[in-house]
Length: 113
Length: 399
Image (cartoon, rainbow over the protein chains, first blue to last red):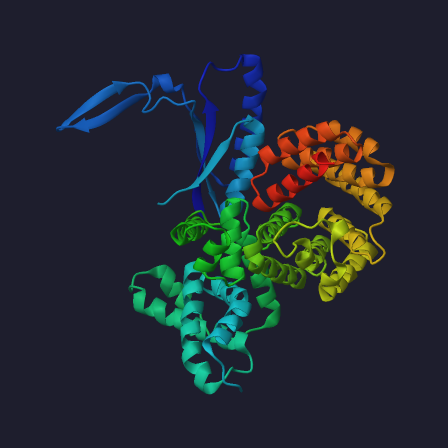
């Protein structure tokens, strides 16, 4: 079995209205539950907006702190799920279910270690 | 046993490459190991076959030799605590090669090479390299890219198969229709790339060879038969499609004695087999159209329109509709055809303007035809087609 990172790619901008978001979150929650039932769920979580991010860099033995995301982008990581499955086909199958449920692109990437 | 030169050995290896790589990939779980081992076996064959002659079963000899070479290589390179290599070695035996499992191995290799997680260019390169046994420089030349670029493309694709764990497996029944489409599309892309340039005939022959492999591996798949038939019937007319000065010759004006009778017969027979099965798909329908075009009595346009109607019902697209309009124009006249063409959203497609130009010319609307030829010329990148359009434009505007 191998771990895969399923990243939810969100467009940067204002959040959709609650009545739009509500059924989407329900659908995503159902896929999340199906992953747990199948015994392949490792971890999942949704992130706050990139504006809440803080970047730390080492410089001359010190750590320099910057407010905001590492890079301003039109898309950003909105959340992710880690699954433990046999091969890419299985990871793509779960990723596809997340894409349908969320209506957002899902990037599937294998862990190196 | 007969003595044999290096070129002939290379041909045998090319024919058996897919089989050998497929078996070794399953045994060793790694495409690079499999490919290197088959390459090692080739070096060994050049040494031995030239003096001892070709063995009775070249495929068996190649697979057995490649397996031994791979085991030697792994033993040399594997450290004591490389558990993966040790485990692989533990399970290796000099099993005789059985045909049944080998067939499945080659199918697995086909589906791995054409996995949807790989870019189409990567699918094509892998299929030609691993299944077709072409060398990297040969593939690079065929696709007009630098050798280093093609080598990089193959390394990246094999790296992704290994690291992302693209499975070495025949897809499940649920996925099979989509995955099969990808495989057929790769082979047809090799073929169309070959027929779009005069210098790349080898690719057409290679695509037909791959098409035969698919039919051999999936004899019950009518679209695989349809694809092979389509390629054979198209290829049969290749020599007639280009005149001595390299310019394009339309079907109507082709010298039929230049058509390849062997390919035509085989293609027609495959089309008949498809029609009897009656599970028609896009490749079979296109093959059937080619068969109608190759009838000795000339094209029956009514049949062509019927086949396009069927194609529109299972795979509708504006391009198919454009081709259908051309057939309708032959049957019901250019005015009816033009009305169909004008309704299509294809202003960015050169053939749309080329078809309009031809229909306008036939209606005697010379100035409109000249404008349409100009629009088509502005959009086509192909030298041979540009020449053709220029000649047609000149013939239309000079009385």
